Image 1 (cartoon, rainbow, N blue to C red):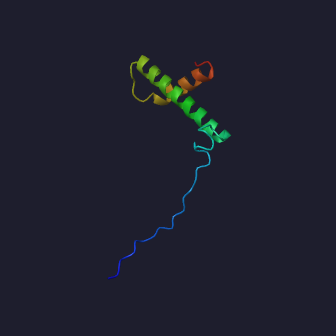
Image 2: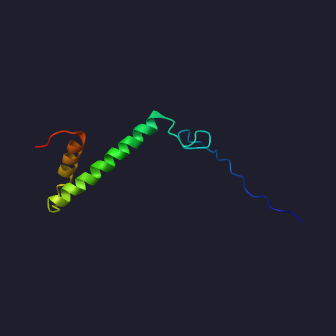
Image 3: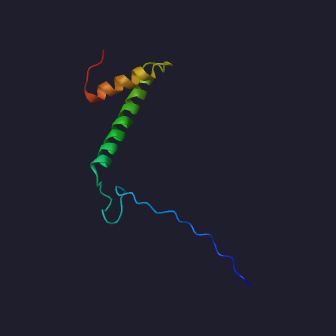
Length: 81
């Protein structure tokens, strides 16, 4: 009696060299990764502040860009009009 063989896959496994692994103990290994994390943190701070501005303004519709730009300026330490 013949036994059917399973199909073999030939997909290569790719490694993310910036990912945390036992060899780098979870530390950020690239400047790009650190910059990406900082950009994500900045965007999160802007998002939260823009929402605060939106709520303080009475939740007006259609002013989301204005609130976002004001939040960015405040976080960067710039004065707004």
